[in-house]
Image (cartoon, rainbow, N blue to C red; front, side, top):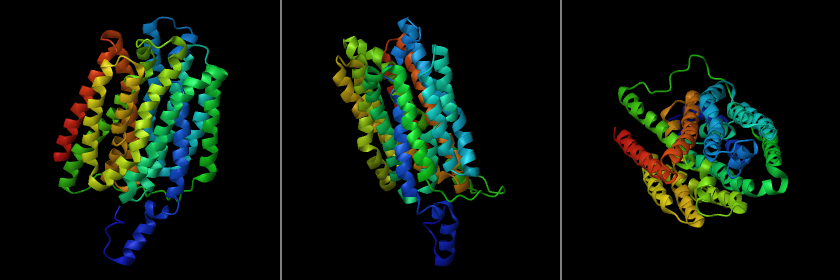
Length: 417
């Protein structure tokens, strides 16, 4: 996109008006507000089951603790496996038919499926419905594609940071809701409440989001620039960014689906287990809420690569002491610090990916970014569950920290290339 570097006023104005960014200049901030709310409500509904997921698995007939841990990891991660598979498809369709239809599809679909999860009779139905939620849902992914392509390039980091704040706030409130609401309306009733919340977001999206979309011509070019130097640079940069996106949620989710069991080892009474687990999980999102938009704006100022590498190292260091905690409030504080460091990664990655591709291919590439991100959300719980069963839960923190440090080295190498 060349709006920021024209030298001839008339052609530049015409180009800016004809571009997707230019046509939606009057709408993107209002769309951002709706997308933030929609991402918030959908993430509340998706994350609120974390504190009581092992309890729900037990309620559905699983009794062995090892099986509870493994089924909890599968039931949680399967949603993001489905989202990882379909995100590039939805991104490509967003490039062809517009970003708003993808938002509406995700909100309506998730509202229906989330309510149906409350009707599950066994753990197999739970897993199947969680898989369906990933296939048909992905509101936050669709919102990232829309805002990432509508926001002006010089404000992309800030806008994606604000959008991340909405999603992270949902991750913050969700575990708290999940720790309290089941005691009031039951576990199944909590899923019905989550579906209703997403239904509100669907209505706001249908009537509040505006988009001026023109389908690109079939002869549109490829996303990689033509000159050899740029082609070589993107050959290293894009894989590094996709790997880093997967590491973001892998770091957070390697322990969270089974954190209730970890907290149980810290001598927390059983009747307080869901509430304490909700608080601990919320601390990570709370830390991210405090810094997401600031780190996104920092990426606009000092460079996204610098923010990415710094945040990876800081997150890796914050993980190590979590393996040595002896009480839940220390774990909560450390999760908060980790969340503050993680918050800068996705806005900076999204900014770099958006700069690396042409406008008519941006939805598809951001879809691949979301796919990589949710792949980490799949791999994280599975790795965490297996390591905890065979090596103990404390080993999960060491392995995750090592992976993040390796990713920081890889990103530094890719940036220098």
